[in-house]
Picture 1: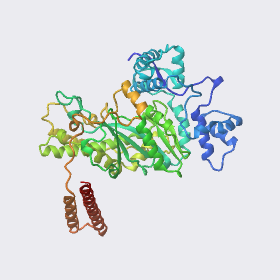
Picture 2: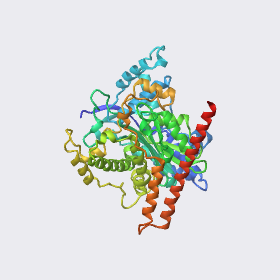
Picture 3: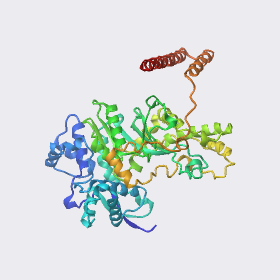
Picture 4: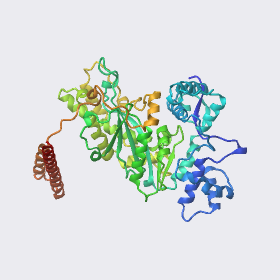
Length: 539
């Protein structure tokens, strides 16, 4: 591959003569001073800073960094810049940087001339700027844009160069902050795409049915957990419809998830802002915790509108570091998806044995149940802990490096694919089925989506209806009646009473469930009677 010069985000490397202290380093020092008891002396702070960043500072510098001048670093994200400058065109600036980051992360080199061309294209499409004269997008503009976003020129030599060698130095301030928190108080959150009904022979993941639009069977999953796995936050799922027919009547809170939507099924700043507020509420005001995020633009924008309370600190991974340092990317998300796809394969085997087409029967309703059950019950605490250890951000080391749990799915996959052998489409390898290479490649937003995200907050656009909803989301499940469910539970109780391994506690639990659902049935009947009585009086 021919070498190309490109822009990427990184910590500036200053000359020795003018080596500044980044906000991230200042923030790390403030965390050390505030979290260490008894409060360390200035001399101790000097020694700590030298041990962490291999740099000697004087006591006056320590005093200045710990003063109220930098108090804003205690509640907001720290920049890797030494200083920043505001943009005259914030909409253009934010979305141009998002475009640059999107292509940089995919390994596509973005040069200065390409940035200028994209800026001109965006400017012509932004309604807010339609009556304003177009800027020159001069060398000065490009220089200031690079300074605002810590962009530097790098030489890319194929795929290996997508991760700059400086990232280990850039991670030191974050690792220093992590050292000041207990494992259970360090959290990581990230999004991931999921082709929830992709089949081994491709199925609906290619061109869809003849004459219809391409398949949209992809959702975004928002995953968050602490470093011990003891506090896994409920999953947030983002789809392309407000309330798909397959999900109508679903009690999301009971299942353990939250549903949000927009027509691209991606994370937007409005949804992220809502997630942040829910996280703050979940943590409360007593615990002191650290939340680690990647520098995705929706995260950055949301944090500006929803800053954390004093007891919660938010740090961003530097660009191009998440594949190495973000715990969720070290195997937690992959393990979650593998458990989901194991359930999906078992279900397909059962459906094919009944001569039913899985494509026509599969529903997003099943996906919600399978993915939330996998997150609650299948992903092991040990897997989460091993992935945090592997990321090295927690400072916890062991003689034997732990690895995420590896599911043995070869036999199941062979059984499934043997039932699909009559398909005209080629069967993909197991690894391609488990880890689709394009699963996280969301389409680049067009300018109308970008403006909508900024002005409308990001949750939803349009009315959410789709002319072919069942094709996209699958059919609704066939729900049994309340009476049938209670009758089945009574049969379960009778069966359990005749099993040798049943305990008294098991019987109590089943009886308790029967009582709960019987009361729900009675309450529903009473509510229906009240509504009918009220309507009759209105007439």
